[in-house]
Each structure stands twice: as structure tokens, then as C-alpha cells.
Length: 261
Ligand code: NAP
Ligand code: GCO
Figure 1: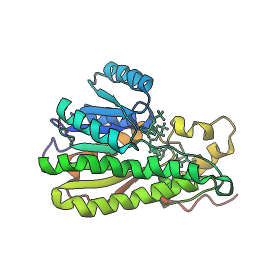
Figure 2: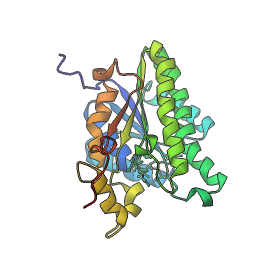
Figure 3: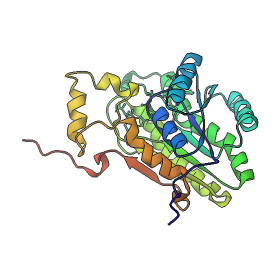
């Protein structure tokens, strides 16, 4: 085996929404594996703060301000990144939002916003980077899915619809673009401690102990738990892995649940 099979030297990696949380942890892993790091966010202050944090970690990242749902801005920025940094070899579609609203109370506008960011955004981004990858002879696209790509629960209908859709977008693009040596795969994180799940993890919140009990590993995941998986899917080690969703969930999807006492 090539001892450098997981190295990403000479590759340009773009991680969306990587100014903190899971995105930042994955971005750092890609950079430490040798990739030149590019990220975006939709808030300049967050981009500036993140650039400082990357620098403190020894990473010379480039941060851009654009929204993944804005097709025109995405195209302009991919062109800009291509000329300023290089053709993107690795795209991680990480940017996402959740709205926890019971379906009976949810407005269609809220539903649409979640679908737009969590599902249409990854399509717009993938569509924008694919021509460069084709020109270069290959690439890697990694979509950040969810437990809700497989499971449902109260209040997250829009998110589950988007992440279930993202799983199928992953499989479909994997089929369409395999002939160009582009591997499209997904990572399905379990319940990870980030600002997105902060409202569910407050002291005494019943969801906190529910999730720990529902996870065989008996803990919340950390953003760092996603670092090895993203490097694997971004590297030559996964060149024959196409349309796979790698669940990183401490065993949630394997588990029927605890027997009541
Ligand atoms: P997070 O803490 O909420 O971070 C999401 C990032 O995406 C933020 O930087 C956010 O920027 C950015 N973003 C949102 N909408 C955007 C847009 N339209 N354009 C550009 N950037 C945008 O989330 P996280 O927990 O790290 O999750 C990252 C990804 O993993 C998401 O796709 C999430 O659904 C998924 N995920 C999370 C968990 C979990 O347990 N935490 C589990 C499974 C999957 P702003 O701060 O400016 O909004
Ligand atoms: C929720 C959670 C999730 C997770 C994650 C699970 O309200 O159930 O926020 O949906 O963040 O995506 O994998």
C-alpha cells in the first residue's frame, strides 16, 4: 500500500460554511492532510474570525463571502477561487440549517428555506465545481447528510426531507459523474455537539439523555469525529467508493434502542 494514500498535497479543498462547527473541524483535517484550504460563509465577521483561528492552527486558508443558494454569486466565486487559488479538487457541501417546527405549524416559506440551503445549495455548488474537476481529470464531492437522511422525528420534517434528498442527490451525481472520475459520497454524522445542537444539549434537557441512551457509544459526537472520515473520502484511498453514505454516528443506525427497565 502507498503509505501516502491519505495525503492531499497539491489538492485544493473547498468546505462550505466552515467558519466553526463540523465544517471547521473537517476543513482543518483536510488542510493538515496537505490540501490548500478554501472556505466560505455568508457573514464577513465569521469569515474574519475563522481566518484567525485557521492561522492559529498553522493553516493558511482563504475565506470567501457568499451564500450557497445564490447561483450567480456561487458561479462568480468559483471562477474567482479558480483563478486565485486553483481548480477545486475537493468540495465538501457542509453549509446547512435546521428549523425545529412541528409540521402542523410550519409555513411553506420555512420549509422552502431549509430545502433551499440544505438540498438545492449542494446541487448549485456541485454543478459549479464539476466542470473544473472534469477539465482536471477528476475530483471528490462530499455531501454532509444526517441521521435524518434515514430517520424521522418530531419537528424536523423540512430538514429530514432535505437530508433524505441529499442522500439521493449524492447517489445520483455519483452515477452521472463517475465516468469523469468524480467520486460523490456523503457523510452522515450522528448527534454532534455544535451550535446547531446546542438548544438540545442544555443541562436537564430530556433530549440530552435521550440521545446518549440512543447512541451505543453513549456520548454526543464531536466535530473531530468527522475528521478521519472526510480525509478518507477526499483522498485516493476512496477512489472506488461511489455514492456511499458513511454514517459516523456512534452506532445509532445499528441500534434498536435500550430495553425499558
Ligand atoms: P452549524 O453549527 O449550524 O454550522 C453551519 C454552518 O453553515 C455555519 O457556518 C453557517 O453560517 C453556514 N451556513 C448556513 N447557511 C449557509 C448558506 N446559505 N451559505 C453559506 N453558509 C451557510 O452546523 P453544524 O452542526 O456544524 O453542521 C454542519 C453540517 O452538518 C450541516 O449541514 C448540518 O445539517 C450537518 N449535520 C449536523 C449534525 C449535528 O449534530 N450538529 C448532525 C448531522 C449533520 P451562519 O453561522 O452564518 O449561519
Ligand atoms: C435534531 C438534530 C438533528 C441533528 C443531526 C442528526 O433536531 O434532531 O438537530 O437533526 O443535528 O442532523 O444527524
